[in-house]
Length: 324
Length: 267
Ligand SMILES: Cc1cc2nc3c(=O)[nH]c(=O)nc-3n(C[C@H](O)[C@H](O)[C@H](O)COP(=O)(O)OP(=O)(O)OC[C@H]3O[C@@H](n4cnc5c(N)ncnc54)[C@H](O)[C@@H]3O)c2cc1C
Image (cartoon, rainbow over all chains, first blue to last red; front, side, top):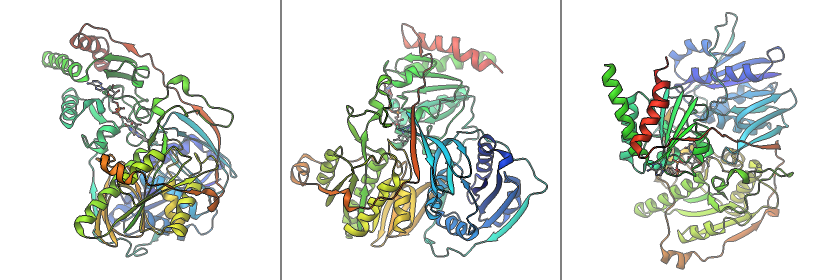
């Protein structure tokens, strides 16, 4: 089976994409029967040097484009991939990966599936699983048409560091200028700063709509800072703009793997729960004894989150002072 | 500027209890007894479109909003609300087949509607539905129309008659750029975009207009390249041990001493 990994190196998380695809390949593809190439798109000349160290396959194609634009990547791909010999294209789980997977499959008259959790593949068909019914159900699909274009679900595999290869075969392409003119006007890139250990914190505190306003979200964030925990929010909190979107926990945000997670004022909708289900220990604080989160937590406090958290902080402060 | 917003109404599956989750032989799950809700991403798309119309009134440009749903009837109340919010046209296309996992079919209907029934300058739709969760329809609409697509849109403003200023989420940040229409906008996690509520007066005055219903027979549906072959219910039970105590302070003490402290002190 011939497969290609497509990585968007124009933004700032190239290594994370490469390690995710490396994890995916090592989990689902048979190394004896697979022959892989990685295509990395990049825009800054000075980033070129590091790219060979981010290749999870034996061959690499490094493609320079003006800047990240799905259209630029799709058009450049069409120029490189004219021979249609690939059976499988793998894209990372992020926004760019899942978008380009679908659009590339359409242009190649192939089949696509995004947010994929599991695959079983041969040259002629892929059986893949992904969630449906807002994460309550695992659906199995048969993909019938080559090339198969897949993008994994966030957090479905562990990242696997890339091992350096001495005999990496590298081909270079320069497609700068290819899409000159598309939307060149008024273009601003506004990066977000990610917390370093947001995916793998030891201790995570997450606040939901039960926090009721921005001030309470800040209260819980301050408490998380005080006790050395990372702080995340549910989509309801993010949509109300009580907290920033990059702290979103769940299928649409971060899939966290903390040792301990406190979910305060969260109902535990499946799309949220997917973001904390890999926690070793889950503590729910909720006023509603029938909330879905109750049955999917290890221990539960049925009470107002604010009073409980304020009391809890006293114990942390007391122990902290004694240790000092 | 003519803007079409496509939406889906779906049963609110968070209302189902554990026992309700069962898959039948046709790979269906009975959700007939729970109420339908508007998909959250489509809701944002609708409110963003209304904001564009509000701004157009101030800028003296003309924004005309219409809405389309491919739906068996569960969206009727929402369509009436959208009329009350003064969408000029509300269309329902009655499907005859199970389209839960057929995003290409839904996209083809939307595309043919724009090409043959009602030309548009922009199409807005949510990035992912609740039931199929396919996350493909909006992207396929753009591909089928041959229009550019801005995905994960979170904020759109009118620039002039042919341009929109859009902010959209990308991995690790946001991009803000000016886009020439025609364009498809796939709306993502857009803060502060709950759909406004129409006034009672507008409900009475505009909400009673008849919804246009088109038959799916007028549209050509493509063969899907992915076939659903199985559905399996996911269950996530943990112990759910309730911490007892006569007041919040006591519960916090038990939580801290019996659970948090021992776990956090492990190296
Ligand atoms: C395709 C799709 C993807 C999605 N992706 C995500 C995602 O990635 N992340 C995500 O979070 N959501 C996601 N959602 C939304 C998800 O389905 C839920 O709507 C959302 O998680 C609800 O957030 P919440 O639990 O904060 O709010 P609610 O469901 O409103 O729950 C609030 C909870 O707070 C409790 N409460 C109220 N007051 C108090 C108090 N004083 N003390 C303690 N408890 C209190 C209530 O009992 C209730 O249980 C997605 C939805 C869709 C359709």
